[in-house]
Length: 230
Image (cartoon, rainbow, N blue to C red; front, side, top):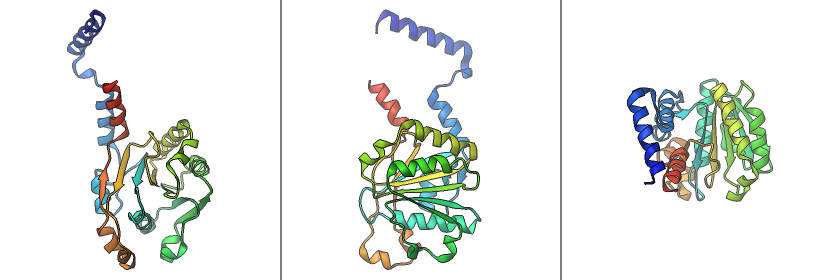
């Protein structure tokens, strides 16, 4: 350690001793905020357990399915059904128009606003506008048809603006994708289950019972690790 580095370290140690608990690292502050976060209970036990009780309000959450038949569609249907039963409106931003009205019960469609988008950039721009509206507490962005490179057209600044708008309204946004999307996301889950063809003919509850989630490292933790290595 250099003389300058040593003197800085000694100064910090001295400051900690003088101020005690008044000094907190950014990691500790984030952990405290996480503990206070209100969560939207989804009715999906595996999802709730993986996220510490439910979808964190005021946050972006990514659900990653790296291949076909991972169960992302049935999870979206379950979230829509749960929102309808609780009297909440849901906005679905569908990239590639893969939404099939026949896959959802008619009663669940009553609380849905479907937005067809041609690209990842268009969907995020729509989400940017929509998250300013107080009428929608839940946003689902279906980007499973996007290539990882498609998300590169979206500026990081726009993601953080969306995040700020979600926080102001305590709304929830869930992104379904084939790979990681944005560093603005605090929570990522990977769907590690793979559904067989016969599973598609089962009841929704049966399919959901077979889905498995794997929490991925939080983006903040990844960034801190990079700083430590650097």
